[in-house]
Image (cartoon, rainbow, N blue to C red; front, side, top):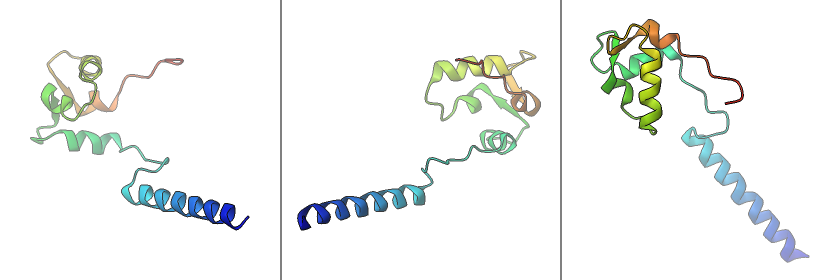
Length: 96
C-alpha cells in the first residue's frame, strides 16, 4: 500500500511541476490571442502602415493557407493589406 501511495504522490508532483513549467512559458490552455492592432503592428516590419505579402507570410506555418488568407484580406487587390483590411478579417465559416 505504501508503494502505491508513493507512486501516486510522485505522479501528482510530476504533473504539477509540468503544469507549472508550461504556465511559466505561456503555453497554458488559456493562451490569449494578440489584439489585431498589435498583430498588425508586429507584422508591419517597415512601419509603412500596410503589409506586403512577404510581411504577412513571415512566420506562417501553412504557406498555402496564409497565401489564401492574404488574397481574401487584400480587398482592393493592390498587393498589400492596409490596417483596415487586416482589422476586417474574413469571418470564419460555421462548421468548418
